[in-house]
Length: 201
Figure 1 (cartoon, rainbow, N blue to C red):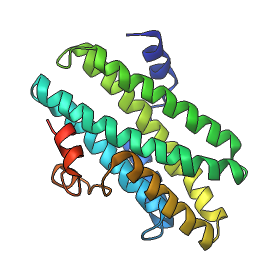
Figure 2 (figure 1 turned 135 degrees about the vertical axis):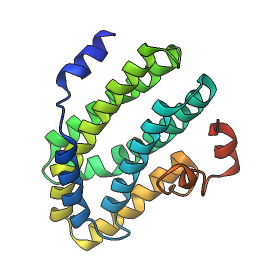
Figure 3 (figure 1 turned 180 degrees about the vertical axis):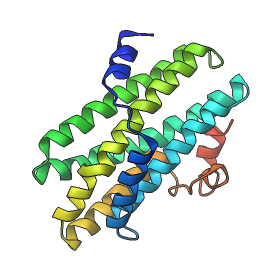
Figure 4 (figure 1 turned 90 degrees about the vertical axis):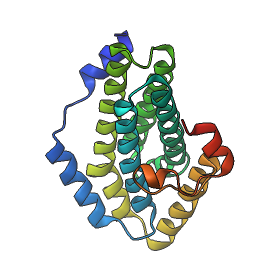
């Protein structure tokens, strides 16, 4: 376990499943159909499914393929948040939360890259994957519990519409596809041929 792994393990509070479910339900209540918050929440679910797909892969080839799918989804989601949602936080009185969000997502990208250095079927790989998953789940919890609900309350309809359009644009810019539906079958829908060819195991 690297020093960064130890730091992440030490500073990531173990929110309960019940606490995360409560935060998500609160955020879902505030989300507007077709809005930026709804899209973000859908991506959070897809990211959780992608972590499970990596963990449950039965051989090295399928695990690396699932890891690539996770990396593309997690990176596309984080870049869209960093380009659109976090600036909105900072510009609406939440600079501290925006700074924390950028820092946490940068650390997650380092952890994600670290998976490439490990045997995908080793315990070290699974340990690093779990540390990354824990850090991402905590980050998602922070967003869903307060940060994004507060932002939803502060903005008018025009600002929400602009955020929704820009978030979708930035996500598609990286992903190169329509946002996927949740689940393994949905992940294969809407992919451009290049994306499917380059990512599918």
